Image (cartoon, rainbow, N blue to C red):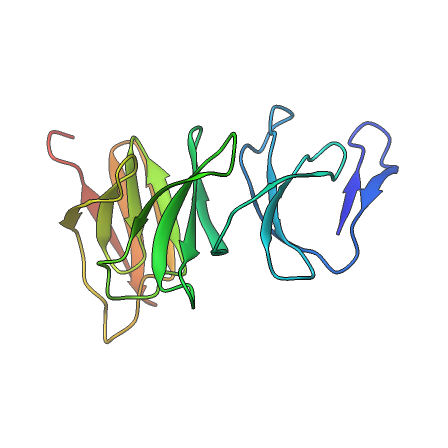
Length: 167
């Protein structure tokens, strides 16, 4: 994994054996780059230097990032969903009541939408509502949230669009 200077294209830093997962912002103001180390820990790297800032203890896969939290799979085999403080990496909550392994999520306006249809309160991890269920035993393969709508692909030929109440 390499960090290149956008201005010059020159190599700024390099990390051998690391795997990129996600970042916090897609602009120059982004402060966190989440990657899996060669030892399997999920770490926040400084995008400018490549230095490790903190580890997300017990995390496997980063699902989504907002301005306050990093959401990731956690638990012994990644079967739970956890939220970590974006500034410190401290775990804020863990939801162990969900009976599915999550591979995809999107966060918007304080709600974390999981690939199997659960909508969680992003601050507490509590289930607000289930918006859709698995299609033939499969979770969504794509989720996008914007303008008060949730677009979900659960069937390869169908795009479901959910509207939030009052939208």
